[in-house]
Length: 277
Image: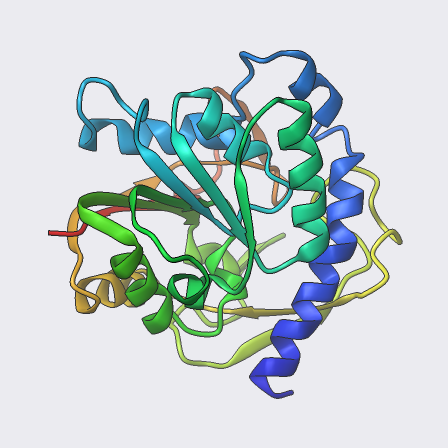
């Protein structure tokens, strides 16, 4: 399948997922809106990585762009923490429809932009103090060169970018038993599979557009793309937790989910913080 067709199939898949996620217990949009102090676990984890690279005031007062923002609960969380001039970009128009509704219900003036994260700088005509993306994002991008260049161009000089995402080693592994069954290194083309469910509870059969196309991006590719775009990397972390129970054997922890006792100690997520000089 041509890359353009694969991206279009993913857009249709995520349009379906948006409806499922917006009514799921996992996102629990009603409870999120009922408590204006609630900050999503994803954003709490992102901020723990980002905070050492900010001033004492943290995210408050900083303009912020959230790439691949989905239904907007994380984007609204950044606004609740004090980010200003907040923008959210996503490929899925139905995701942005839900994001618009959720932000309005929270009284937030957030700018929503439909577009491919690789070409965000062609969709947004301004710069930001902070750009964030996290929790299951770059596997949906066929390549990272344009993505990194867009991030560079959308940052103010001195602005900071953070990605925190599922560790690429997880895409190469099966867990029952623990074996390597797919590529870890980049460049092997798209991994295509059919799935009528999603990562929220009891979702099997609720996604009509079942085709998924993912691209492997190893850590060296992510870091090199950012460096070649002109960004300066300030931190690289491999973390023992993730934001959702992606496979059997994970147990609840403060940050979300972690491997249980007796299982191999491997990274579940990674994070990179980079700054535009």
